[in-house]
Length: 220
Image (cartoon, rainbow, N blue to C red; front, side, top):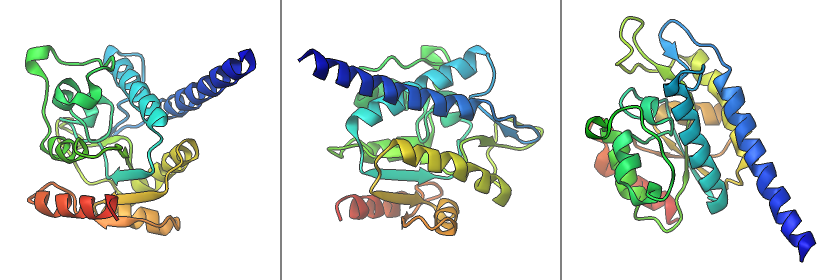
């Protein structure tokens, strides 16, 4: 009995180390000129993002998801603040999936930010019995050089850079199917020979197509 307890403890410790090492490597990438590494440095904000990401990935490892939803990049009202892809501070504070977790926030409770895409995505994910893992092909925030509160499309070079972290994440999680949310992640997955299914991104009027596409792929 003691042997089994020690084995379980060892496996849990190993998972925690894998996730911590992943976040550590993510946080060491120096970005400038129109791109921000939201996990970089020792500011209170970056510590909050790293904390939230660790809590999320650890919980997802316990769930052992078969699906991965892959987006493009963090948005300034969403992941840039929360630290978790396709979430916002509002999602972390209001969605039942995160209720029992020790999430932290950059803004005060009455000023929590909301992101439409994150709200749409989680309104559908909440209906699923088993939640999929969510990640971005480019894990850093691309924005205008003179305005950090903007979003821009990642360059091909940036997208290629993100594939390293995706491949590392796939070594931690036993993913059977990847759903590419948009053409950018779809193209990068195809380049490295990873099979995937395309689903319309919910932004810019794509909500209905996203809902239909996600449910089709998840329930296939």
